Length: 226
Image 1 (cartoon, helix red, strand yellow):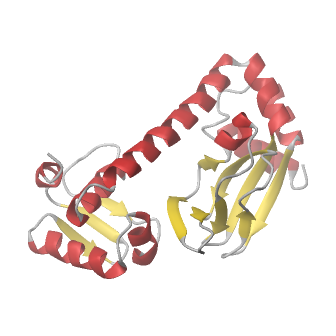
Image 2 (image 1 turned 180 degrees about the vertical axis):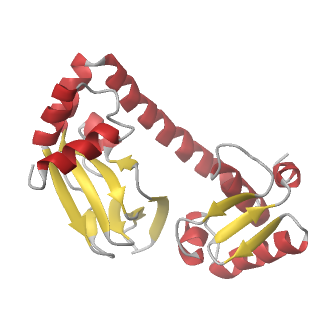
């Protein structure tokens, strides 16, 4: 643990991944956790890196993608604070299949796999949380694969629906990245994404104000995917 120990323990104790740990287990996790502070555009993980542990995003933002031999990047996820990555590779013991790069100044906690496994053996609630995180990531990937068969308007509708827990009237959604990154995430060009936003705005379904989107009509958004 190479940072302010009390601060790191507080972050761990309040992180959703670790919230069920006992104070003694939090202490052990903290002892096997390193703080990673990175400015924007820093490569945190490269394809082929050994899976030495899991990462927790304290603040900032990371982009997860796959680089092909031809140099093409396939965008898989954009993660903000209070999220984790690297669990799947860590559990399987397989080299990282993705590259992870910061898109903003970011603070990460990297926790060694050995302590994760040891505490999972002791704490069933923690083991279930690890499985829940893996299941959530798998379901998200399956949904992403399925969305490739959707039209541009349907992809955007699906994306908006996934950004909220409850579809209340006039819900506000803060885009986690710029339009270029969001477009790449949806396998669209920035021009196509802008056109879809304009169409939905003209139809009265949404309002766009820079990175904030207000959804005016969830019923019609949902109907686009029916």
